[in-house]
Image (cartoon, rainbow, N blue to C red; front, top):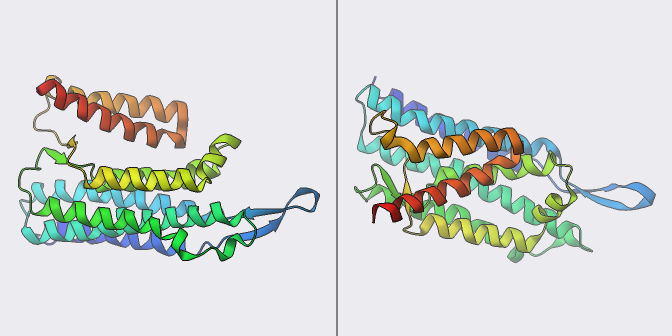
Length: 254
């Protein structure tokens, strides 16, 4: 029974690994467009990576719940959880950004031969994730609050990018997500948020009273409204709301 939570944690890693496989199978190609022009194309199958990362997040949420339910929490489980999170919410999202950077350069002349140096900033995401998780493992004060944005939250917001890209009719959105400077900014901001010591609330319930869970209920309401109104583009909005509400809650306490 004590190994059941660890099996769930390993399932998290399995889905992260599957996401990586899908991402690496999608090469960027040049296809014939209208009027004899060439267009850059990345096969849409990369959206499966977003699905696998989302499933990994669900499994990651429930492994801790199952460990507490079975009273099977352990130091090994904590370490294993972090190792799985590095793969699912660090390495896999980093590779998604790597592919988006390749996509941004592919539109240039000889863009598919772009030097690796221009693509390497994507490695900041898994590096920041590993640092954030290592710090979390040795800090006993982060039970009901975090220092820095949790790695799964960053992983999910990056995982939403392929879904937004291939399900939007807005040329503006497509241009933003294929702009290398925007991508570099996203990488830097998300990496900073992970390694920072910003006070971010944990989405755990100490009790089930409405009064003590108002911030979480606000985020839930924003998530539902955003999902209905924005569909796949809701994730970045929810992510920003999570950070803003967390910081507002900290300031209110002070």
